[in-house]
Length: 245
Ligand SMILES: NC(=O)c1ccc[n+]([C@@H]2O[C@H](COP(=O)([O-])OP(=O)(O)OC[C@H]3O[C@@H](n4cnc5c(N)ncnc54)[C@H](OP(=O)(O)O)[C@@H]3O)[C@@H](O)[C@H]2O)c1
Image 1 (cartoon, rainbow, N blue to C red):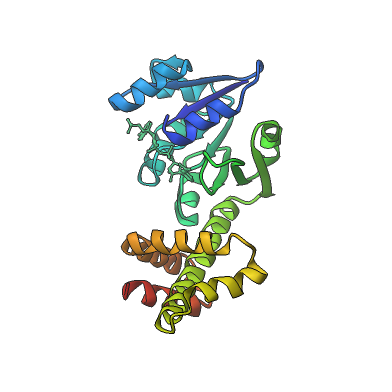
Image 2 (cartoon, helix red, strand yellow):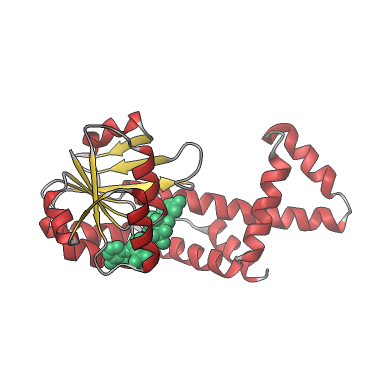
């Protein structure tokens, strides 16, 4: 089996490292890539084809993991040459996933949950032939959600909506605790039910959000755009909170 990689950044390098089998040949191309990517390709030892078109034609599974802004362009350019499965792993909205589906005949919608280089990377997938990727469970966690395109992207956005909204509440509660000089006690009392690492996880989450509150607000705006037909009272409140940070 040939797995073709479009993009050779963190995601594809990790997939190449983790999925090791004599039955699987990984291929990619260095066509029009940056020095950084060309070096990473050369160092990895992956098989190289002259063009991404060649990669798309030959691959049984074509993986697109470039950047959210390139995902549609890549699908338009190479989707038509793909005879096998086209697995999109970009961090994109359900609407973008539906757009990609218009250019690709056998799309599988994939969402990486957490960082790909975490201890146990998990990928949720959905699409007509998603079951065909279950063999990857030998190497990484792969969970099939349904046969519907969009479900994996929706679930990822929902997770992001939940964690960001919860972080807004966490920041607000922490600020109140600070006003009463009860920060340590605040973490301690919640740790009783949320687990011993609650304080550590919360501080990292708060610091992360304070550093990038503008980007987090943009992501919440995307969530609001995408789920605008739903009740979004808490998400809108989180957006207001982030705009004050
Ligand atoms: N890293 C994670 O843990 C993670 C988790 C969830 C989702 N994702 C998503 O997965 C995707 C890839 O992430 P990453 O961390 O691997 O990104 P990355 O490290 O920035 O790598 C992106 C790779 O795609 C290549 N590329 C860009 N445009 C291309 C094009 N038109 N044709 C072919 N190759 C192209 C880049 O090459 P150049 O160097 O030449 O630009 C680079 O090799 C993103 O959409 C990201 O949101 C990542």
